[in-house]
Image (cartoon, rainbow, N blue to C red; front, top):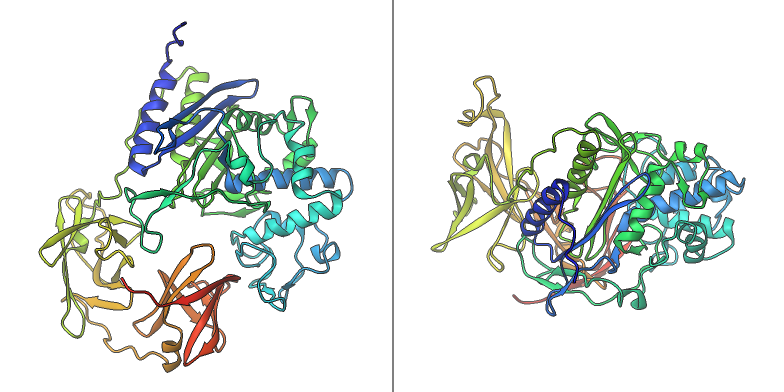
Length: 552
């Protein structure tokens, strides 16, 4: 049997980084594709497609690419524009007058939908269970970037109407077949799942989830929404990367005009969700990496997380996907792969392998240490041990993992795992600069409080108000809700405000609330069906969640 060729330095470094990423992120398996403008450089599989059977990931396994599908939809819309069948700046209601939406801030066009600037909420489906319900616009089109899967579901309907075929047939005929992506599934079905790596989800899906938490296989599913319907193997994704690197030129000719591709890759609006320097084009983010223009996107499904990086100036690109969705995307892998390929192509020194940050490593752990108490005397004691933050409770020490910013979660299932710990700071008080900071570094704003679900704790430095009366009707809404798809929602009152998990709710109607602090956000939560003084239904951005009463 012939020996495989020896690995080059790029492969060795990328394999080392990939192994570290998978270990740190608790990813069962990964697929990967690298390409330049002429040919596939490499496809690879890592880890397991089936953990129980120890089935290794191969380059034939399908992985769900999630929102990377949006760039395919954008290219099809641009094809239809090239053919004179779609005007990207014509009100979409002129094409789809039946859409269940209200637009008090102005007409929405395909341009707005392609750039996530329509003002519509980030709902998963056009249609709601209540036939009279309408998705409501929250701001003037073009004013803000607000990621919106609903927008691409609508674009799918526009494509079907103007092309005359269902989405999957249109995608197959216009994109997959011309690009030679013959193994790709246009929509996720039970049948396509037989060729896919198994997707894994948290076993405790009703709790906060630490990176090394227990995973469990998710049954096969069906998903045909153009916001994220594609499942593809590594080789096919390399072909797609190559098409983007060549400005829309496929192996058999252009799939979109040069003008159309220029429209796709134009930065229209800042998109900080992707990076501080990123903007959004049509169905894809436009960014700069090491001075080069890149196209990038991520994709998150129930059990898969994906990423692409396309260096248009450097002529190299990478795709990666893992078969677990834990809130993390393999962006560090694709970015490092592109940096390696570019350095090799330019005969520069290869960038060093950088260790993936351990979420339990908290550089400023000391800022959160101390004793915090509720008004009735209950305590939480946090202790910093170097860069580790521990909760001391009932004789045990619970290691905490950073979520985002000043929020943390327990790494021990069943021990403070219902909610995140959300620390608060006093903007009028600062502490001493950390030892590792330079003398000129500003002192950190002092941590004075922490919330855990409905409970609120303060330390000795807190000097603010301590009484926060809540509106009486809020008690009608508090409790636990769960959707048919398995989303678990906890609603509670803290400091007089109603919260949905880590998101504050701001009242805009008798039982209607805006989610988050942005006054323009179109994402809402509505409490419905009052029985014996309790809401039985919570509609979160169009999804129905039902009140449940369960024990521990």
